[in-house]
Length: 290
Ligand code: NAP
Image (cartoon, rainbow, N blue to C red; front, side, top):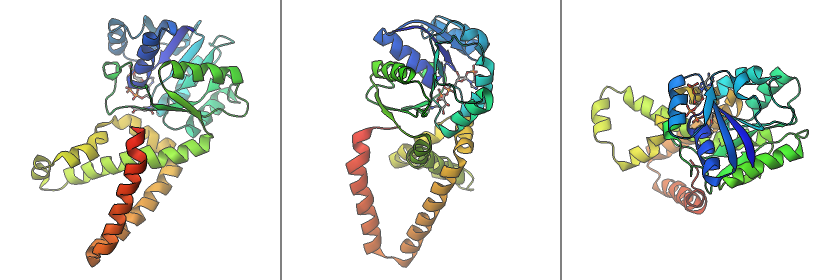
């Protein structure tokens, strides 16, 4: 049971956690924090939070659990704002999409990463933002990756694990660097392909016609290009090394594919498409990741 949860960043991810814990009956009081009073007022009206404070230092007062769900570029300032303001036994966790940068930000502000800070990442989401987009079942049957450090307090890890499980999520732990490598491939690269494709087509002279005749496949493939640009700018910068590697590797694959098409090599195309179809049928359909 969480007596007082503070959610810093009451958007899709933070709002959905608040709603899920509320629905599960595992939280007593929820305090929201953010820059915009309009979003926080709306969160209160919707019953997502009980009250709010715009100042993170004030918002975390008396909280036994703090969840940080701001864009990655705002993490360091958030740590700085709550430093020295937390209860001694407060557990802090976050939902940032890259973990190496969160650990670096924590080190920059606290010196050592606090033992009660448990970095985490829910592998769930949509292309929508803000508290209005949040919903209580976002994490049900989804995976949450926690990336504790060797010094992380085991009770803090246990509390965060139980918090996510009470939302219906499956919790796994992973090394920070491994998380960032895997997510560069499964989430960050696909978002780059969607943003890159839509931007390239939008800049073609015939763009009106292209978008008018775009069918279901185009909509499916490009849905995630409607995601928040600031959030994705921050993810790219935070995971630039791993994402850069994936983009280079994928670029080479695309050049090979283009050469195969130019040669009219039907056998090789069939081989590539069959291998891709088998892999998707085997892995992706079963996991429902965003
Ligand atoms: P969101 O819906 O835009 O919510 C972000 C919240 O943070 C907003 O309530 C915003 O409120 C606040 N915020 C924004 N900029 C801030 C700043 N500079 N300082 C303080 N607060 C700020 O975004 P989200 O989708 O929930 O993403 C939040 C975090 O979850 C990100 O770190 C993202 O990487 C991670 N994540 C996202 C997804 C996804 O699919 N969306 C999935 C997994 C993890 P104000 O504007 O009022 O401050």
